[in-house]
Image 1 (tube, rainbow over the protein chains, first blue to last red):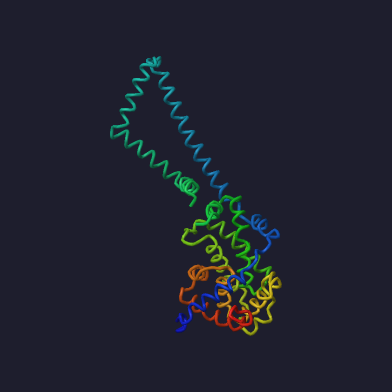
Image 2: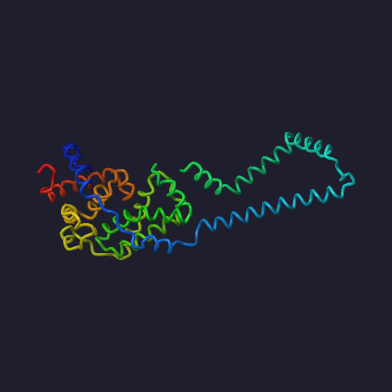
Length: 134
Length: 178
């Protein structure tokens, strides 16, 4: 479909194009309230809707964390051995850390982390875009 | 990637302030393009330009970063204009009739050559006008124009070749070789 003479005088064409581009380039149109009109027409912000969804998820996570801590605290207080000395606590923490390496606990932590990544995937994508300046 | 691209990304991801900057940066090129497409109907062009930015805000998820934000916005503008034209079912204008259409650019009188360029554009077909406008007045590449108009690269080159020949004739007195 291209004309036969498309490349016949390429340098003439390039010179003409350069000249005409330089001479005919448009000036910036004055805004005259155009941008403000656009901003007023935008739907309720996607960001604020996302932020409210984000807040809901964070509240849910914090509620679950508080509930877990409360359950742990209550069960500890009910246990006769609740009066831990710090040496015992330290020892139990080290035992707990050692448990992380076991397949069951390791799998549970892995599933939890993957779940969090899945739930916050859109936010993570946004943060990554801001960080790398894509 | 230009320095404006991060702002564009933030603006397109729903950040209203960043989107405001994006609108200010691109309003001129989008409105110029739509004025060209609407044969100088500034009110209709500005309505379509507003629709363009609103659509961009709503559909940022479709922007995949394969082209510049400017190209993407002009592509949306072109699609909206095409849909609007279908709804309005206008009478097709022949190149000869275009001489009666009001000048497009508000700055046409600022330069005799620009004024003559605007006059010369009216001797082109609508498709050639779009390509010539994007190539000469907006300084875009063949590939960018093809993406905006949704046409094959070869078609864009053909339109540009024909436009160039017509413009060369129309603007002969201004040509640097004369």
